[in-house]
Image 1 (spheres, each protein chain N blue to C red):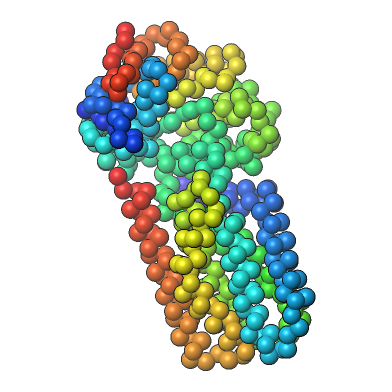
Image 2: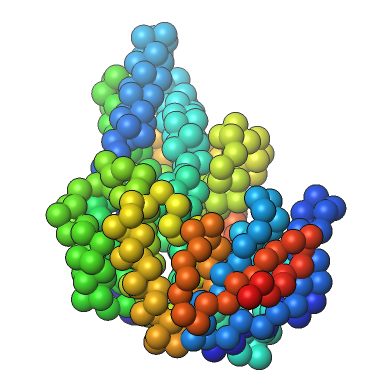
Length: 224
Length: 209
């Protein structure tokens, strides 16, 4: 079986599994809805202040909401002993982590646009901003975070979710600072050298995360 | 095909479960390993399956060392247990199709095995709706559908009804006729021709015949 076909199969099986058990997806929807409504009814923000506060709301909902879901990325495999099948199959653990990151990324991205839509509606956010830079920022912020959480969910599969927050939050802090700053600059319609500085930082962290994950996976799972 | 244990040792929490065990398992025979609960039977099977790493000693697979076999083991070893090892949200057919695709094995054989184990009428049912015994049957049928040289069975009969035990027994005999290497842990000991019986006690493996 070709490598690409194998990857597509692994992604599809996870998506199928996730959408057939909608509890987790419903949790994401209700969680984001609740947080956005709380913010919308708690503050009466001026448009200028709204531009500065909205990125914080969006990224808080994304990080807090998805930690629970992503930390259970390999729950099915762990609870049902499916790892035994993967360990004896031609699939390497690196391939498994990368494909699971991609399928998680797809789910999280769809959900992120739902959050953004909700935020804009409930906070009455009506500012012109560069949509292309905004999408790039959301994707760059998510990929690093999803990649790390997916990797650690394999390492700690079977243990308590709380452990994930303790491990992940300090690691993603630089990435989070970068995307927060970038989102604020986009909403202020101020794409300047500062924005590109943070873009480089965020891209760099994504490359570091990916490299470390690939190396660690080889060390932990593929070596003797 | 031949598996050799060479002074194999494995410890857990400072206690040796397997202690300098040595033995040779040849294909064409069915190797039954017996022992008390906690004697290390499953640990031994997991070591042979490369899920665990030995502390000392080696396992040779046709003279290939444990380290090299683990790297290149893919597509030559099947581990069959009473555990489900299936995606509960997927249907039986989806599980079979998915695993047969990633193992590059023939779908026809998988279909025959589902027929054999009387599972065809449950093809479109989600595995989470299966009883424990049905999950076990499905998992065994799936593991048997891969054409391997080594088959490791860990208590495959426990929880199966008499009819399914008989079907599985026939498959095991068939595999032994095809000169496959079969190692089995089971309290359900069948007197099958070409069987060799071992006992595992105090971390050592001894022939019982």
